[in-house]
Each structure stands twice: as structure tokens, then as C-alpha cells.
Image (tube, rainbow, N blue to C red):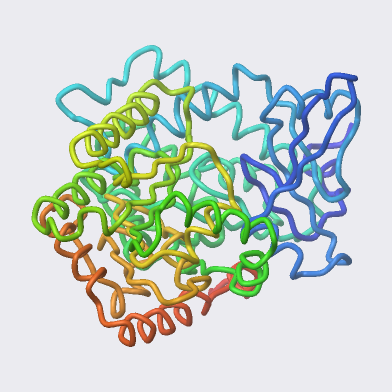
Length: 471
């Protein structure tokens, strides 16, 4: 009987990517047929950059009923293996642990007088997280060719490198974190054994990647404090930039022009715009952004009826109660501002909750000021995308807690995301900035934002992973 390693060695994939979400999803239509919807993003761009003959495979989870039906029917895309993880296991791993524990730890989001509570329910969900990660490790072990390169993505799959190392010691294993990494004391909130499992899992990789030096250093500090150091695992930094070529082309298609015309009509003739485009995640700080806009209207009444805050707050993780509550608060504060300041011909805040990429691009092009004020963010690509597609030049109000701060700080108006008064002053500064200065800053911001396009981001990691391990 063949051993696990001998069986796995018969795989053919030379480059493998593992992520919770894959490049394609399926829905079952009324007639029972399956409809495939393809996604985009940095990983898609990166994989396409290595060419069709590179022997690449993307391993991902079946997230929806449609995805699971596709797996059951044997329907799939070439170069993609979708794992039929049971829905309850995925829910516990993804919502229970990844998004309700790990996300909260790395974004410093807990209200510590009340949470976290590591009880029996947490342990039950942690077991599902282990099961979920093991399913990925086993699939990767089966599919990888001898000595293949495996790039594991994000906080959903922290245990995979260590599990995969045990199954396939011949592989070159990398892991990339798209989020911040918690500082030592905050990471210390986790139970000792969970902390150890997470670090041991990550350190099973040959190489770990982070978006900024700040996050890489935080991880290394946690290893020093809780795991005796990073050992032989190398730690690197790979900032992710905007795909300038794609954004410029996509932002001038007819559907974007149509949405620009509709937005202009809603905003009103001659008015300035403050634009934000976010998922309604707790870390994005949308409520304080609204409060800062209200403060602007109080401090500078001359802006009343002359500026509109275009706020796109797209739903995120609405199966978690805390996210539903946050969405409700965004809506409540918006209504409060519109009731207090609005006039028959002026709506101060245009809030839209329905995801529409073409409309987002239209808003990017129209923006006089872009507000990007997260309380903590791994990178924040919106900060990089707006300058790339802006028609007239756009002032960027940017939180110092966004990963993008380190690349864009010289030409942004930088704010403390908790300071509503400072953010209101920054909005005023952006609105009153000289047009020539705004255009010059936007040009420099655009150059910085596109310096590390997704294809290069991916290939740099792959090449670094393939470098000989120092003795």
C-alpha cells in the first residue's frame, strides 16, 4: 500500500495557490443549470502572469450551494480544484474562527471588557478550523508535483503550512497575510495552545509574506515572544499595488459613463464631492467618517449645499450580528445628518449599500476628496485605485493605520482615524487645495500606487520562494 507521501508525489501541479475563495463561483439557475461567475483580483492577475504552461492549480473552498453542487456534478474550471467542505464546517471555521477571532485579533477590534470569551463553543469551532485547514493541506499534498511551489493565502489557512510540511516535506511552501498582524500583547489574548498552533502552522512555511514591514515585524515579535523565534522560516514584505492598466481601461467603459451621469444628477450641478468606497467592515471606520463630515458642516457652514459626501458602504459578512449592527449604525448616522442639514435641493450624504463596481469607478473619477480612514487595514487598495482613475485630480485623506500609508503618506493628507476633529480639518484642506497641487499630488500618488502591480506582487513571492534556502 502506498504511503501518503508516495501517493501525493504523483500530482502534476508545479505552482499551487490555496485560498478560501477561488477565481470562480457557481449558482444553480431555475432550470437546474449551473452558471459560472469569474472573479478578479491580484491572485487572478498573478497566476495569469506565469503563463498557461506553468502547471498551475488553484485550490479553494466550495462556498455556496451552487459551488457544492458543481463539485457533486463534477463541473469545474481547468486549473481549479474546489473542495467540498461541509457547509457547517466552513461556517464554523470561516465565521466562527477566521472572521470572529483571527480578524478581530489582527485588527484590534475586541471590546475587551466583554470579549473575547474562549469557551467550549470556541473550542468546538476551533476544531472545525483545524478540519478546514487539514482539507486544504491534504488536497495540496495530493495535487503537487515533486518540489512544487505552494502559495497559501491569508488568515483562513494559518495551519496549512505546518500540516502540509508534515505530508510533503519536499515542497516549497509560502504563506501570505493580506491583513495586519497583531502586536505581541494583543496576540497574547489568545489561549496559549491556540497561539502556539497558529505560529507553528505559519512557521511550517519556507517563507512568509506580509504587506508592510510593520506587519512583518509584528509577526516576528510574536515568534520571539511565544515561539523562540522564526527559526528557518524567512519573512518578507510584498506591497500590493493597483492594476493601473486594467483600472484605466475599465473606468472608461460605457457602463461607467452612464453611472457618472446618474451620480452627477444626484449630486447636483457645481457641487464638490467627498467619496468613500468600502466594504462595511468594522475596521473601515465608516461611522467616524460620517461624523467627521458632519463636523465639517458644523465648522464650515459655507460648505452646506456646496458639497456632497458620496458614501458607498457595500455589505460584508452580514451573517454576523455585529456586522449587521454596524451597517444599521451607518444608516442611522447618515439619516441623522441628512435630516439635520439637508434641504429640498441638497442631500448631504448619498449612501448606497448595493455593490456596483462600475458605480465605484464612476465615483473615483468624480471625487474631489477621497476619504480612506480605516482604524487598521492590511493595505487598502481603494487608496491606491482612486488616484489612478481620477479625472481632475483628487485629494486623498488617508489614515495612518492603513498599510497604504507607508507608500502614499508623502502626498496624502494623513489623519489619526480616531480623531473626528482632525479628519474634519483634513476634509476641509482637501476641498480647498489648489487645483494644480491636487493634480500634482494625484500624479505622484498614482505612480506610487501602481509601482507594484498584482502580477509583479505574485511573481516576486514565487521567485523568492524558489530561491535556495540559506544554510
